[in-house]
Length: 230
Image (cartoon, rainbow, N blue to C red; front, top):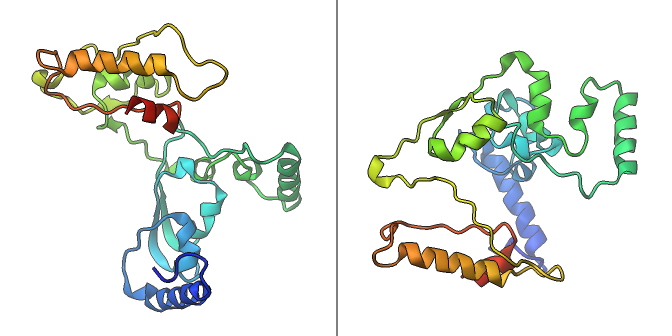
């Protein structure tokens, strides 16, 4: 706790902590941490681990390379259909400079190292003959994953979450259009929030078709709409 913040002694405490971690790194067989912590906590020694596993690699950019270099073997796990790292805050001029530098160095994978591309993209190119596709899907029931399975995975996913008939909700997806909407670029849509609350109240209350169900509400419009819903 004393190493956090920007107090007068915090920098020294952080340095002491980093030194202690370097001393004990070899004594701990398995480390689990975000990639940005690796260089803070572990010695910069190539192949210092037998295996490095990079999870959610499709959301990591080239800054994850220092973590991979610490592995004698690497396992890169990701999904090319997920959201990639953003290049929204990098200008085209800067991307052009980076590309020119990589081309000048005769790097074999220039496009895969540019902003907006992921470590998963890079691994797909470097290790194309070592790819293993995981097709069994355990997160969603078949009717929920069906759209993505058809549009993005060409029907190759095999849904394995099969709830008993007593727990099924059919149809699995319902679209409801609410008249009205946001005005003047506001972040809160009270009309939609009220419609959703009424919809849930009718179905979760006594005598409702989902009276015993638990519910999660996700607002893609931001935290302001979530507060309105709450």
